[in-house]
Length: 95
Image (tube, rainbow, N blue to C red):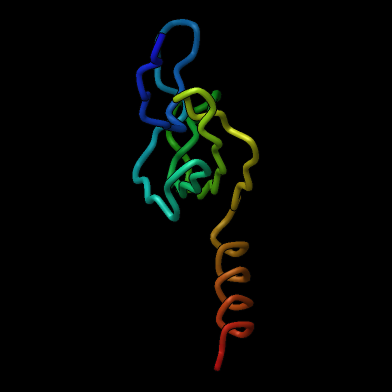
């Protein structure tokens, strides 16, 4: 039996159906049997009910019997961390 492809997402709802992680954008960095996807998302603050600052998650998926299985992830938790990563990548890739 062929499994239907399901579009991967970081968006999540709680038990009541309320969105607690909102996906803002998604970019495929690689496709194929192994896929790398970068997401821009926001978490909802349980106390205030407001969505926080945008965060980034880079996730690796493996296609197994037609279904994408998440194998690893790295979350960039702040703007400062993102800027440090960008700075180091620019430094390392200067030619």
